[in-house]
Image 1 (cartoon, rainbow, N blue to C red):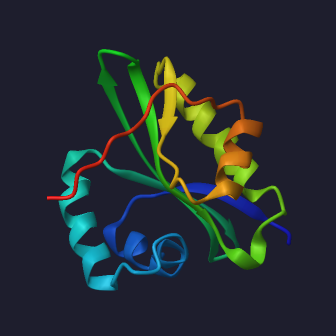
Image 2 (cartoon, helix red, strand yellow):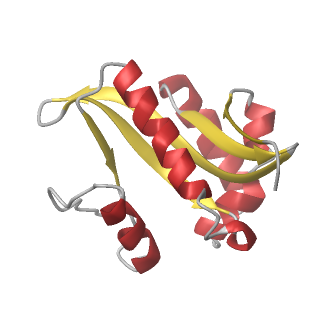
Length: 142
């Protein structure tokens, strides 16, 4: 792999083109649902970054920047995924470092994320990246 670049994915069509990666993290999500959720999230400040080998996106993360009482200004990582064929190549580390630098640049005091309770590989990765568990994220399906 040569010429890896990290760049923000800004156009909705480019985000939609990354469905193959989103599906790896959310296998039950239909492409139509992904498109509808993006349509709803983008006006609320949702952004996306990808790591590319040429034109091929090998990993991505959505993110939001906002403020909460308990955290101050924060960057929230949302749907962080690296292609299964490209794992163990430090791509996740590079994306995480990019997000960390952006959070500092944006004046954030914290970075936060949710990780599925069953995703032990993600837990190990985030602990290595300096994250810790501060609270439980409760969830109620309506």
